[in-house]
Image (tube, rainbow, N blue to C red):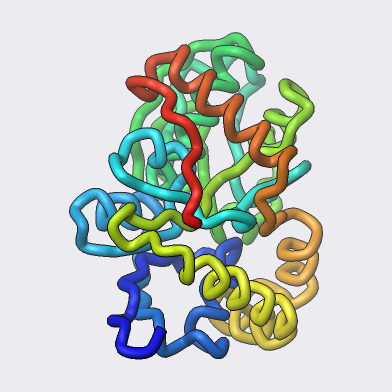
Length: 267
């Protein structure tokens, strides 16, 4: 709105968030957003410290940060294989005793804990680690890697489990990895169309995003297109919300969150 200060937005440079962010900087609402790039976990920390007004946050962080509201209709979800959140092991599943965990996304780490307990029925030691797969597997039996590095290799000779696929097998539901959240004091209804229209604009310019991400990541345009159109769901419909609520319930049961607060949306 005229005279309104730009919204301070914490965003990530992962490929899976590109369509959600690109429109903020290139669409007709671009003057309304001031975007800062960081890792997903840091997005949550900036919101927690009131150093950002909005951010793409790991979905688990909604349960850990006070006074947040969700932008309706938008997320980073997957209804099947996500390809970018993988458990990679050098031994069979039941032989895994330790896992190096890339903690850049706290949601993926929580998802891993839930699947280990409720789906795989193993309880290995989880050790935080920088996202260096060779070192992770040199020091531990398996590794959780996320984001662009997970898309960049075929992992020959290793066993691989796609975390969104395993969640779907266990629950029959999509998994919501992240979404836009605003601090309550900044969450006025006029921001909803600004975010939603920016995403519509970005998806209408997908070829430009693919060109940009090809240069940034070194991945092929074909891989990027299939990933953004077949593996990632940018909506937040009722099935996604069912999956999100179940994720929160299981996280509370395992003590990963102190309680489950209801979903509150901007508007």
